Image (cartoon, rainbow, N blue to C red; front, top):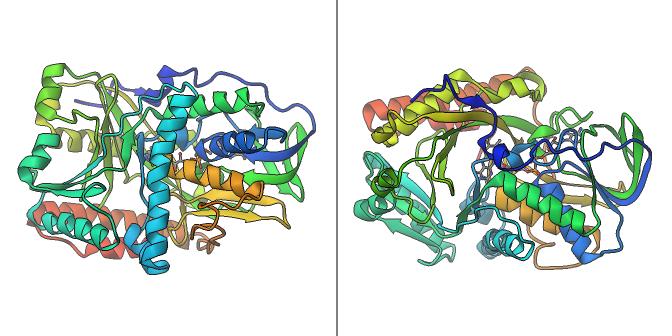
Length: 461
Ligand SMILES: Cc1cc2nc3c(=O)[nH]c(=O)nc-3n(C[C@H](O)[C@H](O)[C@H](O)COP(=O)(O)OP(=O)(O)OC[C@H]3O[C@@H](n4cnc5c(N)ncnc54)[C@H](O)[C@@H]3O)c2cc1C
């Protein structure tokens, strides 16, 4: 298995006309709601707005095209996760509020499936849950703690279960499995099919989408582009990890790169040995996150962190491929499944996800300034952006619902440090997480380096 012949492009984009061109904005535009960014946040917001009030004039603009950002490139885990974990949510607020937020996230996983079905969006949705493997003895304690902790917050066996070695291996026959955790609230999806499907559903309800229209600045009552001004009563910023070039945004959400590979389809015999019969998404308890899914056409789509943060919060297509990180992903995948040694890697790619200074996501509306925004999902944005987009829509039309008073609503983010401190802290943190994994592999014991690394990366809780 090697990366030499792999195409440098997201595997997902082949199933959709990813570069399909909708017209660019070529004049001034007056709308009720302008949405900047055609990813999950922006498109779910547009879709739900058009459902809630069909008379609204809604326009979505994207610098490139629908699904160009993380929404069209991700690992396809549509799962209910809060970046710092649900335990942190309970510490920040209280267990009842945390449980309500968690239940809203659980619902969003189902909502994605429900809307996909009702709108005729074929996005390969399979709700098989999320499997986290413990592959070192000390990680078994992490698995037990995670389940005990979730139950202390009010979750039940129907939500989360500890798996002993045999149960975990029956789901996924990777090497060195000690135990695992199975979490019910996750579905595997095809991200590009979903994001293009949501765009189509919004358009059918009258939403206008303009592609190749970079917003160059924000102004009171709208935004500016090269070819015209957009005037709107409410402007929604939905650019997450891809929006740092908008003036004044580079210290709000930093773009952290996550990289992926896809293999050729495996044979049925190989899948019979490996498992994932219900298309569970999977990862393990290492420090530098890895994530995988069995695609509907029988490939591994597999990704991980570890790519460097780029000075000044820069985002650039040249950062989507990194030989070192892609080779490491291949190495880890073969370590997990040695039978993949001769399997071809067909695609490799990457993209930026958005991280706020306090690692908390936010859904915010500021009526006096006429701006709203959501993001900061730290790599857990697929289902979360559905909840965020829907909540933004409800806030904009002033509907009070069970979602509009969740604790992330109007959470204000501290700014990231100026450079070069930001560059130094984040990259040092990433390097320490890598070093911690190497040390844990060598010693079989937990390493404190990961805690120091998290602290330096800004993850201080
Ligand atoms: C490789 C990778 C794997 C991931 N895996 C998972 C996963 O498995 N599960 C999960 O839950 N999350 C995952 N994530 C995170 C998740 O994909 C994102 O959190 C989510 O898609 C963010 O959606 P969004 O709509 O907020 O932003 P994006 O999808 O990033 O969309 C932002 C859009 O804004 C546009 N834009 C930027 N600047 C401008 C401008 N000036 N003018 C106009 N438009 C602009 C961009 O072109 C882009 O299309 C992953 C992310 C990456 C990168």
